Length: 360
Image 1 (tube, one colour):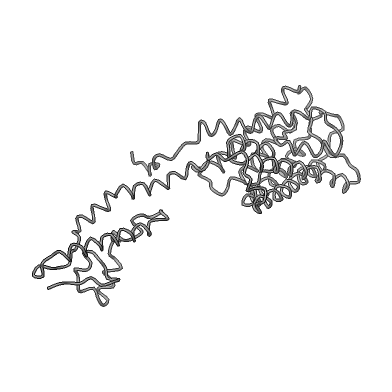
Image 2 (cartoon, one colour):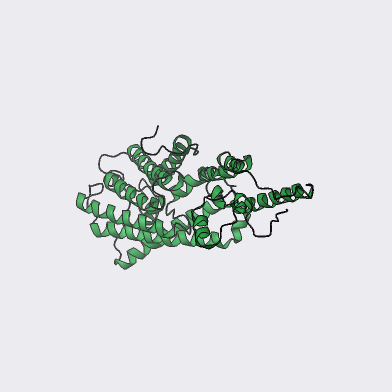
């Protein structure tokens, strides 16, 4: 007697069980393990369902070919052996292994290089929004940081140290502003707020040169507007400029800025750009914390700029450019250096799963 397979009917050893109706059958189906046609077998792969449909169609064609060549006296439905199906689950095909590998290929995204110029960005609405985002975000960051410094009080003697309590207030304001604003603009522009960050990403191929130029121009314009507005709002009060502390020479200040900016970009890479980060989503806030810590550590020595735009606005508003080059050279050396070191030494491809518990 011939047993037919209709459209929509299960194809496998489940079709051998006629008693699957009623409550008992429903309970058996609910507790049954996923079959070879379940997309759970290839969980995590976006194309799993499409490939499985193709495999199902291929097996149905094979079944039709097999049954069509059988004699009438021996024709019967062909049911794959459970052992063969179990083997296919334990030892997946080469196609399935390659599809699973796509998940691991995502780790290359952090080091993907881009063209130095993309003509499509000239008229890309996303690029325009990103540049405007950098303009607004940098304006708010510089406005908050400079205003906090003005409120803390500038020492009357040039190079004099700021009281630690006042410096802590400035550091807290900058940490909160940086963390919140980077988080707010991360999905729009990446929340750079800093030419050193932009150049570091450009040097490692994470952003085009065209967009980098627009970002830096927007950051400098925003800083200038923030400081000019602050000077107007405070009745002409001078905006504090970054300067070297007492006993600090230009080279010492330069090395200090290189180190502080290096630590800033190192944190950016470790918490945001590295796909293996253990704190996804918290990178921008942690970046704000390192900004605050560096401000507290280096504020009385080099000014702890770490950001050419943060130094450019106050200098432009007051016309004081003494040792201003330090706050460009230092961050623009320390930032790309951190990117090079992290990507060369610490950013690796995911080649294995971490051990669970104490399993060795």
